[in-house]
Amino acid sequence: MPYIHRTTYDIIHIPHPAKLEDIPDWMALLREVKDFFPGLDEADYERQLAARIADEEAWVFRFEGRIPAALLYSKGRKELDFLAVHPDFRNKGLAAKLVETVAAQFPIGTSLSVVTYREGDPAGVGARAFYRALGFVPGENLEMFGYPCQKLTVTVPDGPLGR
Image 1 (tube, rainbow, N blue to C red):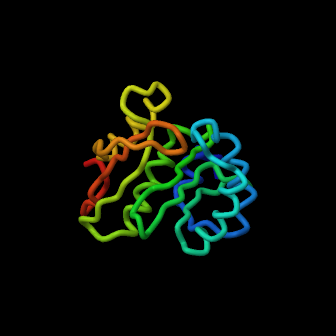
Image 2: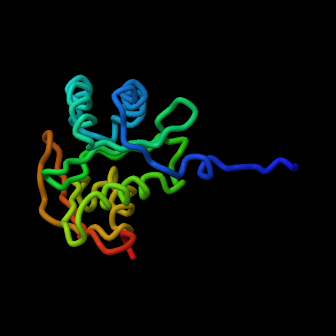
């Protein structure tokens, strides 16, 4: 049988609910991207992560002993709290798949939100474009951890986001 080349995306296309044993690899991912999260307190984040995993509010992709992408959300607040993709795994659809997976946890018509950089902040160009492509629309301006942010919302559709 001939060798068939498989891309990374072919291998890691199904997200999984996070498990407690994912915490060390999740934290390794966090350390790679923490500069994109102003005000993030790593020690506090790690303390809360176990509880959020136990509450089934965390999803990951796993690949060769690593976590290339992870998403933390709140069922009660209906909000995405943390979405990160390791730089080596970006632009492969992992972030969109995680958001779609979380959106599917809510009934159709639910308003789901995320807080990200404000319009015009050069640090948020990529994040805002990503969320807009999924159908999120700008909402109220906020300040979090002393940084100007904006809430974006989307209504969970009967089908894929952004279409």
